[in-house]
Structures are given as C-alpha cells and as structure tokens.
Amino acid sequence: MGCAHAVLIAPAVLLNNPAITREEFAKLLDETHASELYTYKPEELWSDYTTKTEDAEYHAGLEGLAEILGLNCTQEFIEFSRERKDEKGLPIYAPIRKDVLEVEIHEANAFKKRERIETHSSTRLKEGKIWEEPDGQGVVLRIFSEKKCKEQGYFYDMTVRHFYPVLRTEKFSSEQELFEKWPQFNPDFVFHWDQKNGHFTTDFLLRKNFLWIQKHGRYYLDRQTFDRIPASLRCSTTEFGYTDLVLTSEAVKCKAWKLLSRKGMRFFPQFINEFPDAQHAYERAVWDAHTSLSAKMQGMSITEFLRYRLGR
Image 1: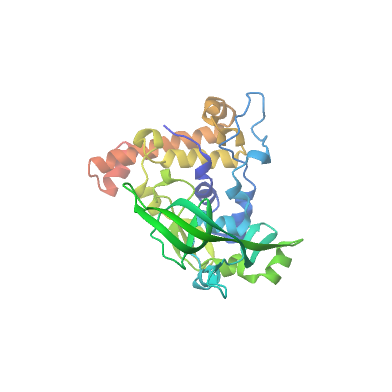
Image 2: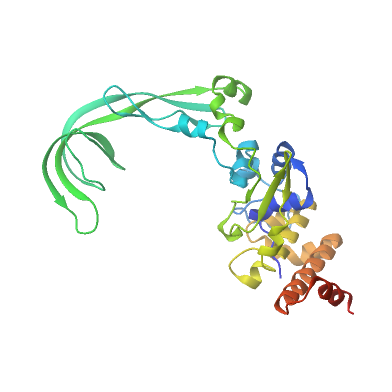
C-alpha cells in the first residue's frame, strides 16, 4: 500500500516545505541521509547514517539540485562546452569540472609514433581523418584495405599516427575561488534557473509524473502531480504513487533514514509503531488515494465525491 524510497526525497521535501528558495531546497536535500546501497542492521537507530554510501545527488548543492530538477543548460554554457580544433585539426575539448574543487584543462595534443594496425571502426574512415575508438585515437595516414563488417562498421588495415591529450589540472581551496577563475562553472551560468516548471529526474519510475513549479524564485510541488500518479507503486507496479510520496515525506520529517535505505521497508511495521503521527498521515494517504480512484472510476463529480467521503 506504500513504499518509502530515496528517489522520492526531492518531491517529498517540497511536499513538506512549499514555497522554498533554491538555496533552501538544496540545504534541505543536503540534510537528508538516504542510501540505496547500505543495509541497516535492526539495532541501528533511525537517525544513523554513513556518508560513504549516501546518494550523492542530494549533497551536491545547487548543481545537484539543478540536475534533480532537470534544468536545461544555458546556450552560453553549451557554447563553452563545445570542442574546438588545434592548428593540426585535432580536437581540443572544453575545460571540465573534474571534481568539486578541480578543473581539468585540455591544453594541446601530442603525437606518438606511426603504427600499422588492423582494427575495427564503427564509422567509415578516410586518409587524413581522425580515427577514434575506445582502444585509441590517431590520424589515418594510409589505408591498405577496408572490409565492410556483416553486423556493423568496417575492418581496416591501415597506418595511423596516434596522439594523446596534454592535460593540466587546476585545484582550488573553495568554490568561490574556482568560480572567480572559472565563472563558466557557476550554476548561475550553467543552468536556466528561470525555468518555470519541470519534472523530477531522480528515477525512471517517477515517469515524468512528479512535477514541480517555480514562481518568483520559490519552488512548489505542482498540483498536477496528484492527478497523474497512481495510488502507489505496489498498485501500479510500474511507477511510484501518492502513498509512496507521503510515506517518504514522513520518513524525512522523522529523520528515519533507516527506512530510506536498501531493504529499508522491512522496518516499516516498526516505523509505524514508533511514529504515531506518521502512521496517521500514512493511513489518511491510503484512504485519500483509494477513495479518489474509486470516485474517478465511477465518474463522480467533486460534490458527489465530497458527499461520498462524508458518508452521505
């Protein structure tokens, strides 16, 4: 009838805290401690957690929030991220944020020796073009033979001159220092924070049905969510639903991280017994979900549904 799960944390936070700013949203996510990898022992406390196995997406600040919300990248960042060519026509990749406080810069390309090789290529090659496959890359100098493969691609006997990227890593002591040197990695530059609505992207079982809206810089769970989602995952078997969301929101309220872990639902009976307010909210959610579904199936009007709920 319901399943608390880590992938529902973001919509659950909005359910519990409507009208929050992006900074507040990121902070509240960071205060959660879910793990789809860690299996709790019965003797561990509800509030126990280990950062080693936590779901990192909830602890990545505004950048992590933007990914969870599925925000689009700005055109300026897309242009910054494009590769360019060096004087020899070889690719120079855009700088990347390798770690929280590290930026990796592709400065140049260096050549290795020429080599005659026999190898597969997923695309058709020409002399003077770049050959790039998982096992290497190089400039095609001469093609001795080409055979079309039965399944896909081509097999070549050719001479190539391998090359490799010359990389440099810059390390910083703080995000502020990093953004001063590389403003292109500031979340304000990367993402469209003016996006008015979207769906949560933490799992495919959300089916784009868990929606959010943004008004004047504050975030809300979109009411359309409740029209789209089923009663629960266990009822639909294909996507999370209303009782799952409510149960997850109660777990977050109670800081019951054990329930939001691998095999966490085996602690559900204990959770319901130890947190009576959560039990009341969960039972109300089950009643709300199934009476609403019944009303929809019977084609009830809102007035008829309300009378039905009141037992008249």
